[in-house]
Length: 183
Image 1 (cartoon, helix red, strand yellow):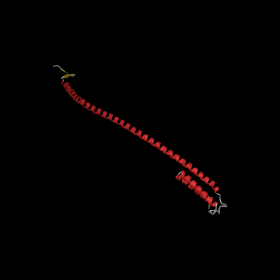
Image 2 (spheres, helix red, strand yellow):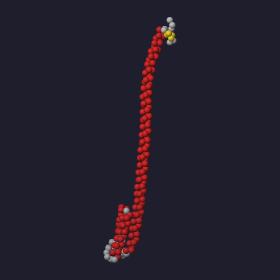
Image 3 (cartoon, helix red, strand yellow):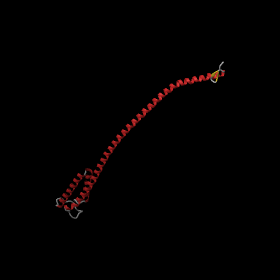
């Protein structure tokens, strides 16, 4: 069918784009060059009548220079592929840069969290020390209060006893308003 078969050109385009996208710009460029060389070689062999393709669908044979527009189209496809890969690489570099910045920010935040946790622990220890002092003060206060209450309760009991005695003596007539009557 020869080199002018449209499906052949589309197949070359598919190979070039797939190679460029999957393997990178260098392999895509090499595929364009190899495809162009293949098209020119086959076209030259047809032109020199060294090979005889079935060209029933075509009225005349093609000249090798007729393939230049097709090769140009393949080159344009490679440029598109190059631009696509360049943008992908830019995006990848930017993503890596942002990832590193994010990791650095995360590390800084971890340090800040650690420092804040240490501060909170120190504050908690200080509060616990205060609570311990208050508990110790309470224990000492209760001891002092207990020590004061023993004599006071004894005094209260004695005063109660004295009052009872005073009441019983005043009923006997021996005391008059808290003093003894003279006989």
